[in-house]
Length: 355
Ligand code: FAD
Picture 1 (cartoon, rainbow, N blue to C red):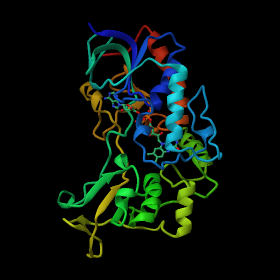
Picture 2 (picture 1 turned 135 degrees about the vertical axis):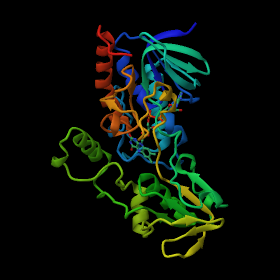
Picture 3 (picture 1 turned 90 degrees about the vertical axis):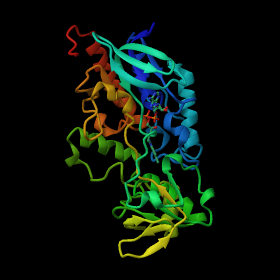
Picture 4 (picture 1 turned 180 degrees about the vertical axis):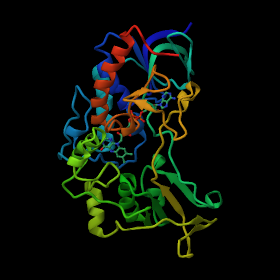
């Protein structure tokens, strides 16, 4: 017989921890189902030298702040992982691992049926917190299938070592490309490929300012803020050093791939050994598809965090489309606070509008 809950959280990364922090005070019965084998969500898969783009004080979940790094700088992947492990140990949220949610379906009446490899769960509400790491995006470039060299997405990149001495393209003008290009360029003949000239933030602008910008934009006060956003490149120390070395210049994309390389817009063909795609991610929403909530744009449309086509489904993390800066540590906490208040109110209301 399926276990019953008020709320099931699908995914056990930082967004789930943020929701759990507020849910535990509500008295609602809830569980977190995560297919990872340890704490940390996507951070477990980050590359070895990954740096956050804000200091620890701006990179914390609510309740217990991330300790400052010894040098007061930007925390590394390992420091974030350590923090999330300790955060879990401190609050002991009800997480079950590894449990993969395959499908979330309507169960009739008041419940959703959450089908997993560890059996079925019934719940009055589901919070989707599955993140984006499992759906890396690679653009559909002509000839993609013929390329015989190495292709890797930043989702699976660990370090520059395997690229030593090779001719490498780093594709993508966001923070991933901007952090990976510098270290690859130390060992390989690397070229940075971006759609447009990358936008570098001033050295004194980091995640702190970006949080405020994202929030202002969502609240409709963007006119009061300087322009810029999460896509702009934060000058963390390795990026700053690369700029000083003169390696941070970018060229426009190749038009096609061949068996041995790429063809540039001027028709020139070049032999390439490896391409590192730093081209972003899409939200991991496929488990919710049976609810018929995924729109042609690939998103689930929400009012705040509540799915418009299925009010029992709530979404946290993913990106600013489901809450200001909600894909970040600080943003997830802020959004979770208001989301859990609304979710608890909705569950307590006698007139839940469900199909
Ligand atoms: P995730 O961490 O991806 O967690 C989701 C969990 O759900 C995972 O454990 C996954 O395995 C699990 N899951 C997925 N599908 C299922 C399923 N069907 N069933 C069960 N479990 C499932 N953030 C900041 O706050 N500050 C920064 O400075 C910062 N810098 C960044 C720099 C880079 C280069 C990158 C790439 C990201 C950065 N981030 C930063 C982003 C961010 O914090 C992550 O995207 C974050 O991991 C998102 O958390 P999440 O909980 O939403 O998702």
